[in-house]
Length: 440
View 1 (cartoon, helix red, strand yellow):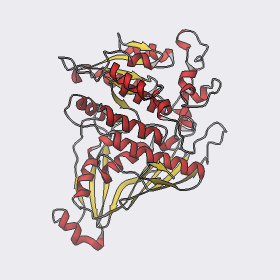
View 2 (view 1 turned 60 degrees about the horizontal axis):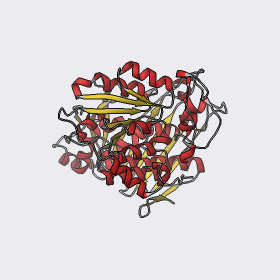
View 3 (view 1 turned 60 degrees about the vertical axis):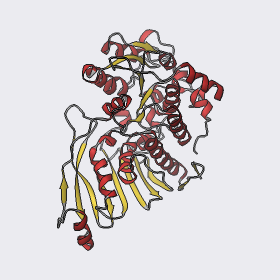
View 4 (view 1 turned 90 degrees about the vertical axis):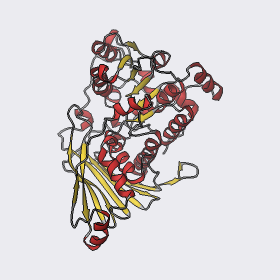
């Protein structure tokens, strides 16, 4: 089930000599004397053209940045983005943006099946990269991006927002200190009860968009598919696939890669540290129980369990047809850590911050008390918000810190997510071989 598209196809070259040539042609940029970072956004649809573009543009002075270019295969989105950021250059082909030597960093906010190729092309072109979640569509792609980051030494981050939640970083420190004993279990998940599928409700179809459209109506459909690079099958124009790509396996892992990547990455950060960990066994279940319209691949109820070599299991749940959530918590031999009082700092609607509650297990009160300041019962800890994940990306470019979700954590998270998708689709467990970094 795991795709085996070669790294050559990811980066769109004819071999290693071409890779070296790209690196020589575009050496890593040095910021100018005024320390201003010029950013290009690749993919300016709903998230890239909304959250990222508006956030970056609104903080031009505060963060000493400038959105200098945008790229998209849909001309209307380019025109709309340029109306927000006057003077930004617009490109229908992202490769032209990467040739712009004034651009220091890029935000990749395209459909999932393009994340790997664009990220690698950008890294090879000497650009720092902020890539929206999920890191990639497949595991080999994630490994290829990770290895390119290791080699180029460029700043790279993936964008699962809750890795910016300081509570998970505090939880990691607490686990290292033994405050809840040996960790064995973690869980998180939820969803919402909608009358229509979230991917129908959230994403509207523009009926005027078309590969034969004129002016703003034009869509470069072949480029969007990426079939010439081996990224997706070649099919006739289909607005459902274009505007609601998360419903279809060739471009997305559904809610597993869309929503649970946000959940697994911070849990791995807490349990294993900033570089994450690869699972040894993943199972998944669920189904298409409600939205049986024949127009989608992905289920509306999805449950996955991931077993790790560190001897703990993670349970993740997502559903788009019923309400209710399961609490986010990490369970150890002597106690548990619960995420409480989750709130959104002003101006950061997509980046919640939580507090922590340490709850003892009754049979291990003495051990819990010893590691938790001699407290007899629950211990509540208020956590101060960290700088948001985009701001930390900009800090890292300036050498002032580290990103919230680096390429190591991103690749480890992608392995768990994709193994779950394949376990669901094949109806059998997926096993990981750490020596070859492949799925058995």
